[in-house]
Image (cartoon, rainbow, N blue to C red; front, side, top):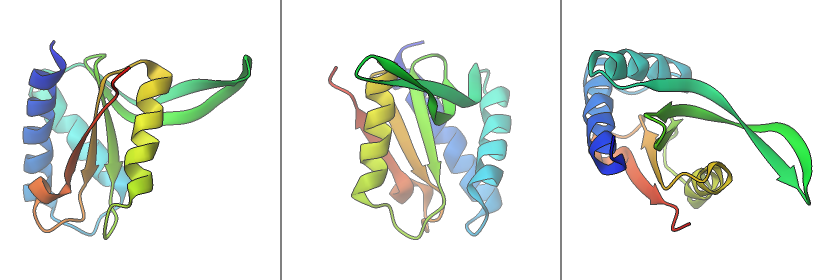
Length: 125
């Protein structure tokens, strides 16, 4: 699936989760609910995917975990914070670079509206 089409479906799923659950829950609850929505929408995904990293050619092991990796082309980072900080987008960009993936979505479920909590991050490779 093309990353932009995939991201549109993910955004719709996130809006539905936010509409049903509202704000105030832990990230893990939103992740579980998003997984249900993605399944219902027919997307293939993995949760808590280990992302190995290297330092000067030496493996660091599974230094990171992707919250949700959808259709092998979009990384979804889930947050439940009062306000996103620049470090959150930087973290997602690092995940994109390490995985050689181009598109990521930063979803903050603690916004008044889900649309306000969505940030696209693009790795220019």
